[in-house]
Amino acid sequence: MGSDFFDDRAGELVSRRDVARKMGFGAVMFAAPAPSGGAAAGRAPGGGGRAAGGALTDQDIMNFALNLEYLEAEFYLRAARNTSLVELGVISEADTTGPTTGGKLVPNLGSDSAEFIARAVGTDELNHVKFFRSALGSAAVKKPAIDLDALGFGFGSVADFLRLARIFEDTGVSAFSGAIGLLSDEAHRQAAAKILATEAEHAGAIRLLAISHGVEGPAFDDLDIPPTKEHPFSTDPDRGMTVTRDARQILRIIYGGKPGRGGFYPQGLNGTVR
Image (cartoon, rainbow, N blue to C red; front, side, top):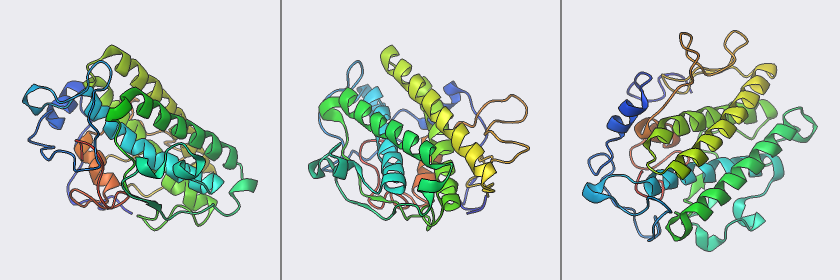
């Protein structure tokens, strides 16, 4: 998947204020309400429900993050342990709006240096799912249908696994970096900052493993910086800062460039930001 995987350019690095403006905080960008089985009724502590004028709320942003955490957790659980959130009892079938399909235990991962990292990252992602579901309470969106084979790779070998894990981790870091300044509640911002730091640790570990296994690219969008020995981290060369993506850019990646649904989410995300 090269840099021309998506039709339009992702844009330049922007400040948090610019991200807030570009996300729109309103019905213009994410106008459609969640369908039946999407976001549940209720309020997230300190900033849930719909704000006046249709603006996005902390609840909306946290549910967007929860959708991403469902995907990451399912990926690592299937790749490293051959299990899932439902099979582990973390969520029930009633907590989903579609199955998780695709993926398998990665061959030879158990004897590779990447195995302990894969298991540790999977545990963190599972705990992030638990955290967001607990924080959101009855307002937490259900796990959407997920297709782990959306890109046609990720489970055939250790290198294959690292190639997809690197995409997930770099995307996750840029998503939290773009969203953290949009949260209005201080407790939510502090929690998001801790998760951002955790995702950054994951990304660093996965990128170094990718380099050691000879997995260097290609770029998956115009902002992506594939890991190399010359440039191991996803930081811009001038300021040493990681890439930030807004919701539009994240949706293009996880939907495989298709509008509204597709890619890893064949029925789309659950919630308002979709």
